[in-house]
Amino acid sequence: GSVGTPAAATHTAAADKASDAAGRGAAVVPAVATAHQASAANSSEASAASSTAVVEPHGLSHREGMAVYNRLLDSATVSGGPSGPSRFDAAWRAAYDDHAARYPPPTLSPTKLEDGSPNWLPVPDAESADPSDLRWRKRVVPGQACPPGRRPFHVLLTAQASLYQEWQTRIMHYHYRKVVAANPCSEMSGFTRILASAGGRGDSLMDTIPTIVVEQAGSDQTRGFQVINRPWTIAQMVKTDAWRAMVPEDYVYIAETDHILLRDLPNRATPALNVAFFFPYMSAA
Image (tube, rainbow, N blue to C red; front, side, top):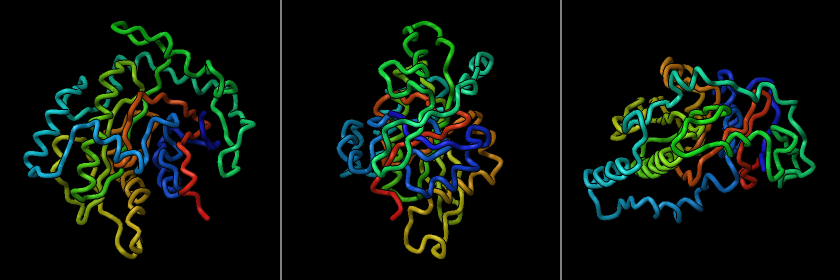
């Protein structure tokens, strides 16, 4: 089912609210498109799932590893080139209608979240076998134009500058490309990595993955907890001009490098509801 919390404004300049929400522990933070509960792997699942990507750094030089990675990208080609720019093109824009703006107010589910907090739904029948907000997907016919109903969202991947996270990023990006290539009517549109690094320096993936580089949080802010760079990168990104040019979609999905997309994610967020994957082990004490 969907997991969400009401919000006064979510989809317009969504990242402005995301920086605060990212620090609260959700893997897919508020102001993002939804994730079905088995669609994005957490870190414990990622190690097992990553073997399916056939990207193995052990015993390979950096040059050899990049060659393997690039061959994998060639096998998961997405229209628009290897960098995977936003697929929210002119034709899609012309037909775009955010029908979620006409939904009734979010519905409170009788089923609470695991920590006992309320569980809000985008439409009253969201937990049924045939939720109304996903019915357009049943009209998709392979080889034909996509039916009305798609609401694009942009994947924002928060990352830090390290060889470890570079490899995680390659695997995550490969699976994003693979899923989008297999689902031409996917609502997953563009992909942008937000890289936090010392001095705002780029890395070896800059020419492969669309990236916005920001200065990483200092030790006075992280206090040794480097994960604080996750909300930090979002907060710094919205101060740049680059993100407005690179993220034209109304909705964003914020992911981490140890997430793997195994299936197509539908956008179940609305202008009044942020949707997130629930990670109870990250709840504040």
